[in-house]
Length: 254
Image (cartoon, rainbow, N blue to C red; front, side, top):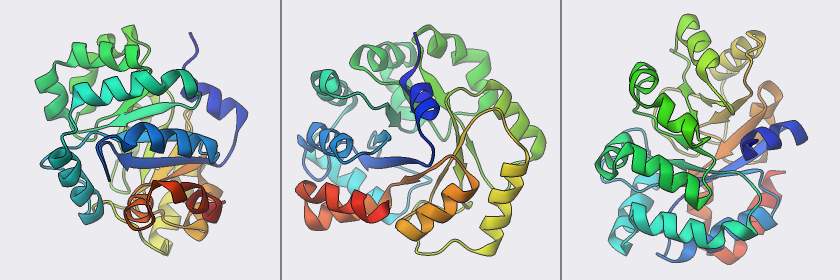
């Protein structure tokens, strides 16, 4: 069975992926946000599993995660919400979360429930590639779930090639080594990093994340890659404007 992530990259270029935190602003908003994002033309949707200690996240995503947990969001509820709406949704859905809650839930059970609810891939920033390959790769592959790996400006060439060899779907190209957060510009050092990765001609598509916030940064990032991910700026938008104004945000990007 073909994974929906692969289908997107066969059909489109300059992929727009949107990240938001499950259970934010309100507990029952997740299905509505997914539907609105699809209707607005978003190509991939990343759903953040809220966690009490998000190491790589900036203040906007941390705040949304804290609110979501207070609202009562948890892994089982998220799977239920996604399963109930999946028949209406054709775009790829990816869960992004830290390894600890997945481990507590049970990795195999998490993968099985991800698949049965209609999830296409997982992004687990703190799951090392060596542990994944030795302990969990077979479980992921048995459920046709793609594990999306991250690279940063500090990732060595050897490691990038190793990640490229084992990856399916795409490689998440972190634009800088700091925490997540909306930024209005991409500096020259980031452009050099993007160009360096582009020249490597990796087998997998690359999508840039961290610091993409508007039309300008989206266009610049996608000059060097196959797509870009917007998270903090979108979360700020739905916090301020509400989930009924999602289409206006997407139109402002492309």
